[in-house]
Length: 405
Image 1 (cartoon, rainbow, N blue to C red):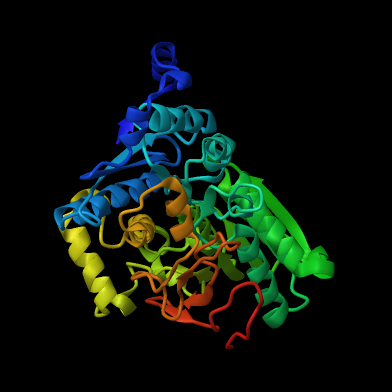
Image 2 (image 1 turned 135 degrees about the horizontal axis):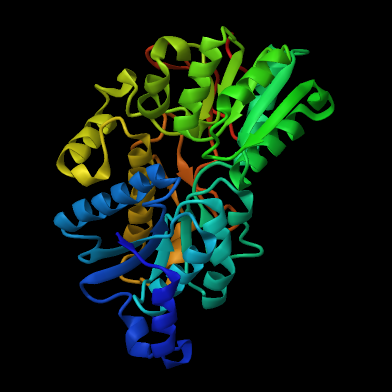
């Protein structure tokens, strides 16, 4: 991983123009022994915790290379620090495509950065695969045929929580605390859409910045509203703070966390497992901190991987699981490509996936099609019992399915 900034781009662009790129340089993306892959990730800055995703991706490709590569070719992975800045993301993507000569962009994190580079990559006809964002605009092949998301939609996740509330807590007062960015807005919009005519039951909603130092004030305001249901959308660190603050105020609402904020190791344990009992989320990946998976073979493989490749993170690091699972998806695409590693065939194979990824929850699969550019569409409602996650409903996609009381 290399931190590169806009000043470097200015130097590079001054020396090298797009028109000067030769066919030989473009061909360097794939050789008889190498495939070049590019990415950007927040390795530093306010969201650097998610840099663990990129470190796990790099470790996964290192493991693949040690096993002989994919169809005899090693992965050369360029992953640069964009500081969570969409301007940096675009500059770095231009460097990756025009200077580093990558075949494709893979698994870059965050909605703003991925949206910032989407137009450029589609104009260049460079695959933008498995953008790590739940923004539905990153999975629209009719407008951007070279861009494909990976995880379920944030807005759909919000609708799922709304339907759950309507089914089991009808008429209850609702409050929401959501991160003031694309992700938080999308999830909150989904919550409102799912509630429909009863969205008026949302008595208070507060948007906060990721580095907000006044979460205690926000939670106190929400508590005084008399609400019985709290929907939180944010990071694991802030989720832990909110759980602790609510417990200190002796406020025990039905507590719904977005899936990104719910890992046992990075959210619930720091909050205090006894305080987190009863928390509900909708998830698609196995939580590495959940003892339920300790004896399960896929999790055993995960622990072997994480023990060997220390740079990938810790055994209970859900961000590392996220990166591992996304890298596994790209490896599947490249395997399906065989000897045809043209960018056109890469997109064709990315739109022809159908396999059970190792770290997905049981009964979930990765599937795509020519008009289906979201590999993971399924979620499962789960509830924390103070020790482990318990399923409280069937696997579902867009339609809400029955939930056990």
